[in-house]
Amino acid sequence: MNPNTVTHGQAGTPAIEAKGLVKRFKTGRTFIEVLKGVDFDARHGEMTMVMGPSGSGKSTLVAALSGLLKPEEGRVDALDVDDLWENSSSRIDRFRLDHCGFIFQGFNLFPALTATQQVMTVLKYQGVPKDEARRRAIAALEEVGLGARLNQKPDSLSGGEKQRIAIARALAKNPALLFADEPTSALDGQNGQVVIRLLRRAATEHGAAVVCVTHDPRLEAWADRVIHIEDGRILDDQRRTPDPNATLGSH
Image (cartoon, rainbow, N blue to C red):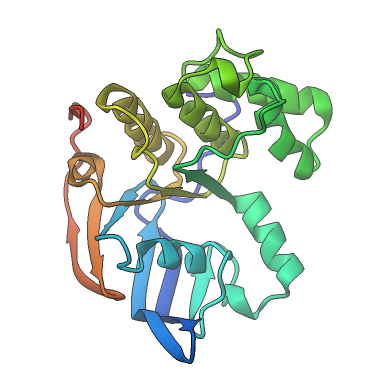
């Protein structure tokens, strides 16, 4: 485990809870209801997999949970913040910066920055002093197996390495809430397995509540809980025992 790791809340205790989330988008003269009264919760030390076809509302749900997209109805209680969306936009931004990590399918790296600088940037926004930010960035990159690539820029890295930088960037903040949206979809089986195992460790070793959105059923093996969403409604919610030795074949 990264020596800078902060272990969050007792395993199995609620980290985030949402009630009655409704989200609509306007298309022309009509509104499309993407979330239809969704209830959701995720717990410290667990990986919750949100699965469903394209357009099912899973990415919109994560955006509403994480303070990125305000729902029309419902509430989100996260960590020690009651009704997140009743707070000011600056307070929501600060909550996201301090407590949330994000991993997207597109990596979202800066072309001109080295791996170390990519991770340091987010720590700088948190107000971490430069030397401390560098130390934490290097430790996070070593944790994801990139200790030999600290000074490399994205154009000299593979897709799997880029995704691991994105994970290191998220983990360096020691987030209590880690949101991953299709984190393996751009990767082959071998790199996808590395990534999902790192997310699993974020839950098990860091105590984060990991919420992973995917349409790939092969990832279910690593989850503590699998939630299926379709047409803006949760269809089923199943708890399971994760398999730490699961393997992910190629697409």
